[in-house]
Length: 353
Image (cartoon, rainbow, N blue to C red):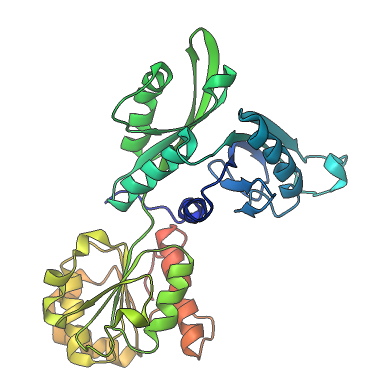
């Protein structure tokens, strides 16, 4: 499985682009120094009327970025802007942000069918197939070469051929990097961003408390699949935007491809079903497995699993969720989603609770 990406702003931008089908500008951070709200690879879409989708700062730079982007929509040529908010004399546009950071941003035309939009669409398509992609953002060089490209591509221009080796390395190592080279005898620099698919989450059990969990995960942009053996609970109407499967718990591995998921939550409130789910998940490579319910119930389920319980030991989080004092279904859903987010981001998960 490719390294996953928790920043799902790419999909949010593409959703907006599909709705408007009008000339826009795409602003991408390509380099930062010091403390900044977002880092290289963050993107913001600006429409001709100034409407923005996404954030590159905490709101302090967006107004100026929007004005610059609107000008670029009219001029149809990419430009680089730099903001330096370090030091006591931070007087950029009188904002006094005090962020103690600097950033370099490429703003480029993003009309339907443009190179930038095509690149984003292609990267999202590859991610949807579970594959990693590389977005190469050329931000220094000949003006006509500035902009976003995707790799791999079926055909390439001279500059994309120059970038091919680095892009292949970025995909192989799943690590973003900057690269400098000469293109048509002009010094050129590009930010090569590794883009992995968003983490997919499997929710085993479609009861009432699964609804707020699936909603929160959907808001985060995480693709979700819900499975339940009860037709009343495995209704697509109850889980808009999620993949819903009605099937027996003991056929979980046949009903869904467990290799696709980064996390699974077992919450059917039906002891035999939860046992079947855990037995199938024990044989999977899913790195996070959450189990709803008290410790005594977890002990009973693990005892029934016998030797298979050992395959869950390093991955099982039960009771599931961060301890935030949650008592409502919505609060518990928040605790579960937060723990999943932390684990897939590598910030939590060294010791299951």
